[in-house]
Length: 347
Ligand code: SF4
Image 1 (cartoon, protein in one colour):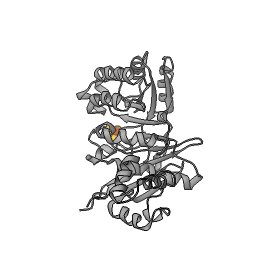
Image 2 (cartoon, rainbow, N blue to C red):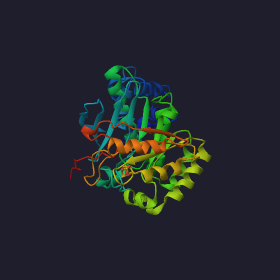
Image 3 (cartoon, helix red, strand yellow):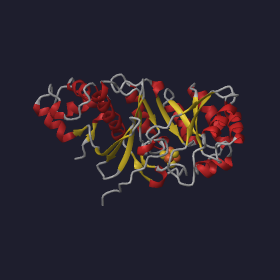
Image 4 (cartoon, rainbow, N blue to C red):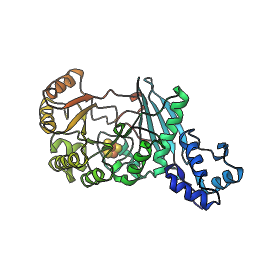
């Protein structure tokens, strides 16, 4: 019998499970509290459950299927975990602590099919979607770590780990709901962001399915020539189509959109590109996150500080907000575009 992964179960679903095991429905609330208040995954340690129920749960369900294969801590405090799945695959999750935030960078897939040339995950190819339980287990694991570390909680979640989240849309949407739920992880809606490479039909689906969460589009190129060379998806949905969709997303969701823009020397970080990006962002309900390239593809280099400063100077003339993301965890390959597991599936 395949065990059901109950980390993603709603209370009514948990009630159905415990009733099917011959136990009263109120036990569901106790199990839920153990999982989310106490961050416990071992049924044997859920001490207010009767022993027979603990044993029945052990046989029928699980709230932990991942194994931690490696943990790396950066000099800046960023921590990266490599998880192994039950079927022998590996993927990564990152915790980025700052003064006032505990942000988790969540993976939605093992590998990725999108083939962005600046991204190490692309070199893995696409292996499979993560299940809802596997997505939530990342947050559960990191939450336990943060609690042990300083008694705090995860404050922000961004789906910018491995994979294109909108190609695992339903699991990601459901995960966002549980990350946000007061009975789940309790992370504010506006602190949960899903980042897409620009899968146009899925952006519109997301605007209807999960309009309350933040959406970021990885733009990375200010014209089709540059963007198509960096992101193969641009050959399918070009910038004009993507921007029309972005406008429709803003209209449908009422949200401000984030454009992420990677700064690569001589490719995306030029004065001309800055002017094109300014035109794109002007008069749109959006902000821009600039991400200087991190080590990964040896054919690409990050710009110099002066080149970035000039790029920012041009953008500063626009009517939109611009932020530059400080690289976190580059020494352990935990920064943007650097996630890729070396370990291969065990035959
Ligand atoms: S940047 Fe994102 S969408 Fe592109 S290959 Fe990497 S993980 Fe996939």
